[in-house]
Image 1 (tube, rainbow, N blue to C red):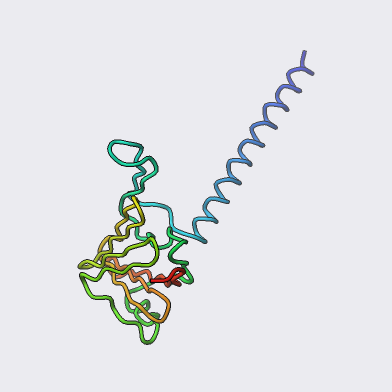
Image 2 (tube, rainbow, N blue to C red):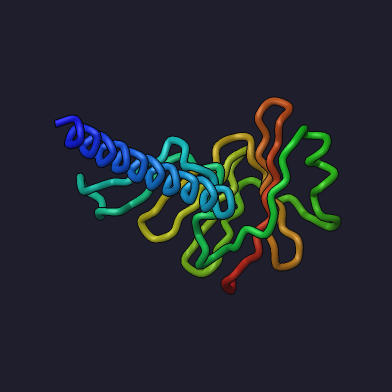
Length: 161
């Protein structure tokens, strides 16, 4: 009888270890993919009907441009104090004026006072305040600040105007 109990214990523990390792591995792959491509969503809603098409994405997304690879490819990200990040804005970068609407293929960016509205088809994302968009060559530079902390993301435009 003790032998069967020992065998059952080994089987249960083995399954627990395998499931835990598999779950932890998936979590680490998700975190690694998120850190390479785009931050984890904040205040994001995926609609499932109710007057809009299933799969519509709406909400606040500081990383919105990173989620549109058919229009933009994120090339770099710098984070730190506002003073530090300000030194990383590329030379010649020009701020985009409030009220400007930029179109890149299926993507539209509306620059509003301290925020961006980004649309692609039925997807509507908002880069919340305080966001400033710059153009430089074939790139966009997005600086988002919160308190004394800032994040600068540089995007290559991957589609024609």
